[in-house]
Image (cartoon, rainbow, N blue to C red; front, side):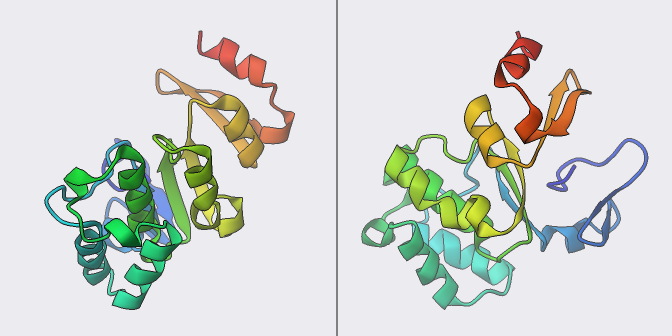
Length: 178
């Protein structure tokens, strides 16, 4: 629902002052989404993908080049996405998610397919240092708890955990999901 991909069955959701589902178009400008799928066109290059999304968000080409450099993909920026490694595709997908400088990031396993150096490279864009509100989905309980302020656990669509992340025992979380 936060990604505006699903409508609430009842009630409403507010994101950055926009009420869903009626103002989903407005909310999308405030959300950077990095899902399981990279949402990149495989036949286009990394640069073409980012330029396409930049036009959608009315972002200049300088921002595209800035992000290609930030994720160190400049050398392969004109290769079709289908020819890039999984880690390179993930880095481009992160660049796409932050392209329009959204105040809220929705991140599903943002470091999937990345080696430790590449994961560190993304810290200024999607980590705590980015200074954005983030909703992080992760199977790496220890890393997620270290990175987050609050932990919310869901099981079968029901809340099973809602606490300050610093107060949560990772072993307890793992036990909840056995």
